[in-house]
Length: 223
Image (tube, rainbow, N blue to C red; front, side):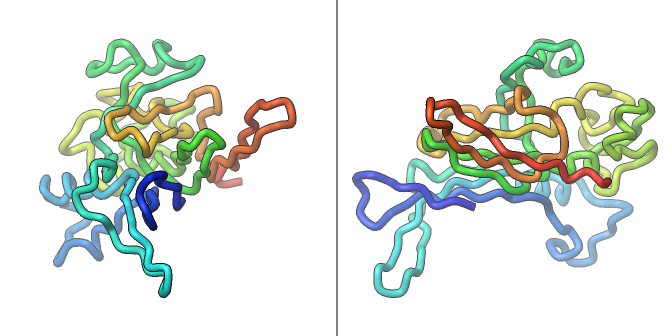
């Protein structure tokens, strides 16, 4: 969660937030976890991800009010397009039937903590992405906690990319640090493979005295 300056707009800032995961039992009356509907799953896809929202502050109370229909207001969801950058971009292990280039991926999942960069963007750690995938058979998938059977959320029933048996590389496209430019709503967020693939618990940046960025991140995998 970050508040960024908005030059030229008095008392206004950009609020950037992670939407880490959903709790469908609280979202839907009579929710059946064993048999979610397509509509419920699509709502969950839309509820995951990131938000950038312009807010206006009241100097007396400190209250922040959303500025509706501001051009910088933006939602990034489980179906938004992301760019894959860094040394793994284009790898055969990241190529899928929907993306034979291995450089574009839909969505970001389980965004936990993050950070603000010195150049004004925000970072977001993809944490426990394993829970969204089903049908694992490889040791590497099991190491990340992807089960051999159905997933807890059953998303694979409505999109084959969440079924590792059908799309074995899709899960490889999650578990990165995501960078968002909240000042450019037309830009595609980026997944930085140079920062490693694991269950990122945050990503905080500082500059060294000679101007190099250093990123601190923790791994939230069990043990």
